[in-house]
Length: 154
Image (cartoon, rainbow, N blue to C red; front, side):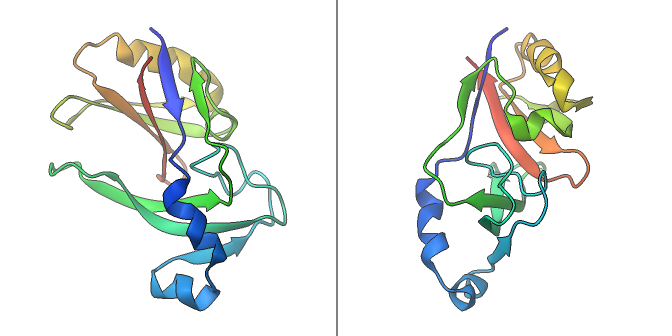
């Protein structure tokens, strides 16, 4: 079963990179200078930021439905307009990390969940999507639990 992974829309985040550290702090956002790679997986490009690159760390509501699974958490975004959009491709940031894949139904209730090394994620994604009750999948980085990307049928 084909799947599609798309990074976050860069538009809401572009202005953040032009703000001062004080202006970011007033919004609960922090600027980070990347000192290790991999280390700061961007949720737009779905790749790790480069050493020396500036990224912003902010809170993101990735599961906005009014269910017990409503959830938000920290994400990194780099200053880019290059949004990952791939069919049957696991992007670099996901492929190099252990993942928690969580399948949700149309009511936004979690009905499946599995752990997988990123390199083996494609087979698990395809398998979850054979369950017609799975409307979409959220990938989280297993080590820290942070939201990585949404996955849908292609």
